[in-house]
Image 1: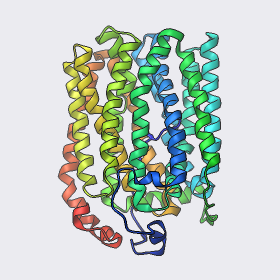
Image 2 (image 1 turned 120 degrees about the vertical axis):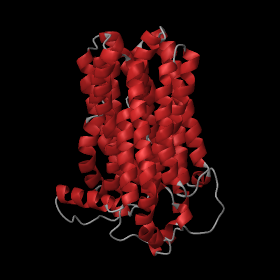
Image 3 (image 1 turned 180 degrees about the vertical axis):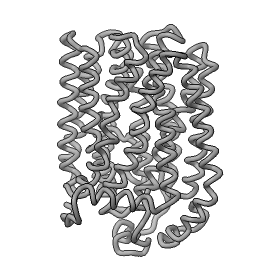
Length: 448
């Protein structure tokens, strides 16, 4: 399951300016902005080709896992438990993994993690096809994938810069990656619904296992200069603390990461509860769930394509705040859902705003952070958007068991609106505090 979510903050002790040799080497010549500028780079084209195939497998498993959990137990609480353990280990391990990723060869790390992920999918497929799957298998294997993701995400996101020779193409690369991820999110659930209906969940897990071969092959074919070994400045914990201080010294990005964690906790669990909406509220089956998930995928793809046209960090903080407001409004609107066609609209908005917030925060990190700290700071981004979701899944699953999924969405939506309002009110002060950093980077006030 090779995604970004894929898809993505720094306070600087010392930040290379746009005129420094490090940045000049990544920006060899002037050019006009391009919606597909990142595709000029061979390594990135290989990455996108492998990603496009593998992400379909990711969404097949993401569809099949909660559907199978609900089919086996019929319990909203157990859906929350499965969602919790499939994500909870990632934010616990990712900060330490980020330190190690800064020490290790990133491409090799990704390869090892992808092989491990393929074996995890093989185990899911074997149990499902044999008819011996139990709920504890889904919990344990989901937790195993979360551990793999804890290493894979910071390695993969920090490796993005090594695939791009011109740093000005980096925002475009991140947005195109999000487009591929969410294109799979649009197609994957519809395909998964057909596979589950006709062949069962094992077919989805099997296809996911096979899809890893595309990513592994693309990584082998890349020609990437080896990064010089970085001297270890201390123990893992000491370097982790340095990374947290480094990120925390930039007020604007620190606030964006906190907001991402809050919105992930409140909105990130929606996918866990969608099987309940499909089966109980809308009285449907796998096909109904496929439509609901495809609606969020369509919104997410739309947001990612919009971001692909942005080649600057200009206006990103304002955009992030508006996305959280849209997320809250979409979740509150789910209270009005009485039919599948009505649910499509708020779910489109939820998918649109979530992916734009995640990708915009990721762009801020990738554009500003120094390479030797990138793994650690990216791991904090992973903690923010992955860490909130399992907690939200557990709490919202328990709440939905008492008051229903729709009302749970409404409560979470109101809290999202409150978080967006707090961020918007603090934004002018955060911008003023960020002026020295942006001046060192050569960015003007209107690029904040």
